[in-house]
Length: 499
Image (cartoon, rainbow, N blue to C red; front, side, top):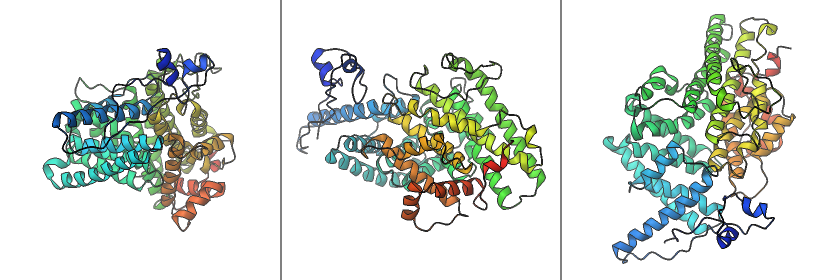
């Protein structure tokens, strides 16, 4: 089948008046300013059956039209309005033009399925599903060949298959976890020296977050947090680290801290020396995060210029929520959200280790406050889920929300405004085709996955747990407490308060 390529993406009103359209959904800014009812966007495709006897020159035309139409619609919705593609998204789009194997099927699986679901076009969505299963078969064959298994296009393909599972099968994180583990294994097999430049380096930088997030969910250290993987892929002068990659370096160390915390809770809770070692590692990470904040502050200064907070540029406090009018691009906003997550985890573990080492709670610096970062994540929901943020931004921020939700749950704050605001985000109103609804489904599935690690709190049956977590705040609280307690004890952060 083939779509109409080259048609304007503007809304119906702006096409007729030949005015520039800002493409905001569900109604554009031009129509809003003129107080007109926006007639919407014609994203539907005119299709006709493919004939295998069609001359080759027309087959090429059909393939080009499909690529342009579906890809443009998907990326227009996935990226923030008016933004350029990030390094890794542009990389995926460029790679599509030169690949005819599993990678192309993976791209078509994501684009066709997502656009088909959102536009309620079952034929398009089913076509995407067919490409997904065809891609799985191709990847299986490639992995069976040692010479193909660790190539860039296979790693990129597995990453896209994980994105497909998130956007098109959010009722379970099983498929997402498997694909992310596949990416993790393939990267490790190649070693850090393989990702120092070019396509390989950009691909590596783009997939790190998914691996780190899965490692935090499972509370198991990842090799991405080791010195060689933090250093060698950026050893070329042509590949300096961005702010986002620098803060990802710090986030990559969180799984190791969580694994160490679990080991102490489950195996050696009275070992003072081990608690001191964990506390020292946390202070080192916190120091690195504060140095990052000093470097990043000039970018955020305009955002906070109208804030009631007083800032010391030498030790800036970046725990200020972003609002709908915050003047910061989405790439920098995501780096800031990752910083909040790093601080939340490190400050939470510092509080635990501080008490376990026998230190007086009153001596802990007041700035060590994980709750502050959980609240700022909650208060920034409107910025990261606005109509102009793009579906990719919503997907990214949901991981930060789960971090904050779990912390507040383990603090006994399930009735707080911040917790309730995030609870609404993972149970949003609206049709299941919307990205917020599907991200909410995925977030609930991930919370259930995290509950499996909280093995000290027994609930039988996946469906029972799923339904009860949606309505019973007590279940959510207990799962969070056992998760933070390493599965062997219910840890309540209220017991680690300095007041």
